[in-house]
Length: 170
Image (cartoon, rainbow, N blue to C red; front, top):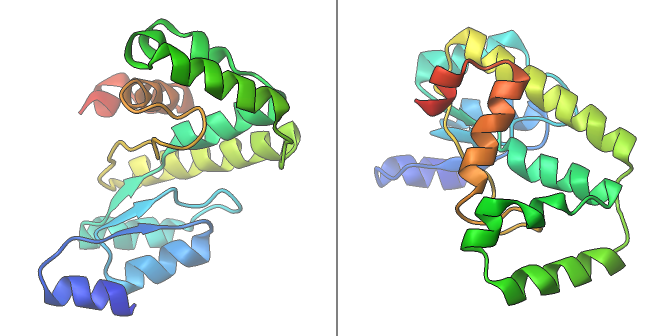
């Protein structure tokens, strides 16, 4: 509350990273300008999305970072072989990333990650249906979330979740 209040006082935008629907509601009540992630643990109530629309608060679901976590939980590093990633990622960085990932212990099960992604998709669709401004972000810099090509991946994930392609592109 204090950080957002100070940002408002100084005419600065604020972006609030959230993890559950209570966090989202708290951020909306405080007057944030955007909500990042939304909730992976539960569904965000329609009333919260209605309030976000009314207040002009944007929603950035960052599905890409959760897709990366899902891939990590399954030991799937195929993303590192994608053409666009190969074009923008330095070869030594991609090779060292693959080496680190092959030895990393998994913190979440694939089933848990599937459930998180399902809730994230549902929340994205609910935000869209409520008319909330959607913005594209990816949390690039996290493991398997490479700066540059993740924007395209994010839009692709939106479309797979049910967002019309024209909306994802806008």
